[in-house]
Length: 252
Length: 222
Image (cartoon, rainbow over all chains, first blue to last red; front, side, top):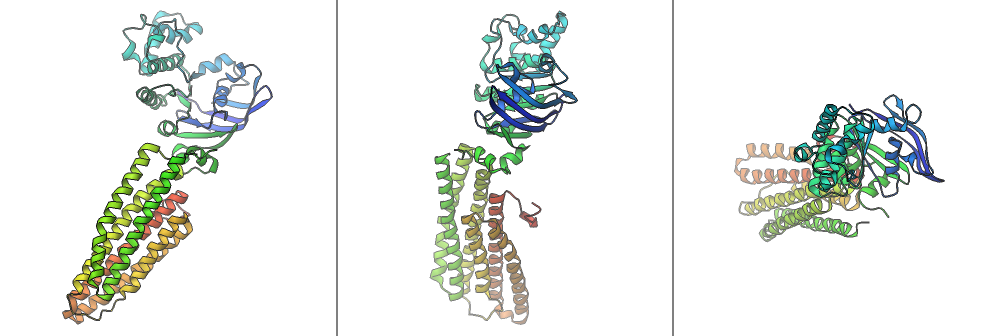
């Protein structure tokens, strides 16, 4: 099941560049939250702080607290454990090109030491079903490589790969920005279905997508969270003029 | 800045104001036709209806195109939704003016009768409501729009008083029943114009502050 994420006074830097300024917000369990904002506003950095990926960049550091339920991910857990509980899907699908479809999905489990063939098969099927890809690839699991799939299928493969390690949170950084409208719709349907089991955070530049998939939306600007609340309110009646200027395209 | 989109919104507003001008003119002329028993003036009102209907369709199409093509949000979305609704109300104001003109035209065929109802006064109040609602739309002024809602009660009261006095007249002087009934219907038409002005004012409030104040919900509670 999904878990609530509670972020308090999160600050992040690259070298001496202060990227995030005291972000505090609660991301509801089993809900989809969209993060919007202009390029360079810090939304991707914020998401990368939620699974401790930010600190893997040279010169990057973060302060403040991020709780997954009761767990303080910066104090009480290792980055590896955090990343098992918080899966991530990126803008461009990045399946392991030389691995089969099966091995792509199973890779995370194998890294975690799972060797039992039956367990692997069960989890791969379950994950591919969850990612709404099973029917399309079930006959080619061990014959085709992940790279042989279409862009939309590759992205769902990456989602299946993220789900295979049984996370509680799924972070999606512009997961449909490189996809055609049909593949985008499939990803959005998937988000709708997955949120009953996972807490989902999606970074998107597509306002309509945010409106379609997320119950909550946060607007970032210059490393600050300007507004956070119910998506419907945000897009119909935002309370901050900067939010309104951004979503109506009056920026700059 | 979405320049083309902003221009399209400005054009939409401009076309709606043309529509508003035609609807206002139709009310004025219909009342003039009634007061002066001027058949030619009534004809002018009837002839203006196709232009109002055509504009309604044009504005509707422009608004729907913007919704489909520009996928507006927040204040822009509220503006276009408000325009769509105001458009319908203005067309109906035009319909009410036509109804008044038709009734006034028929009354010229009847002997003139002294009627205990001040139609021009009721009309000027209904017109003032429409004008004020449109002014609020032009200026994006929610407070001015709010003041329109209060005027509606006065129009309703005048219409109720007209109903009572004309009903009494019909009982006392049955020979003027056709004239009294026509005046009654005209008063009702004017009361409906006041209702449309109220709707327009509510839509302006929705556009400007995002609050739904229909059906008596106050701005503070919305």
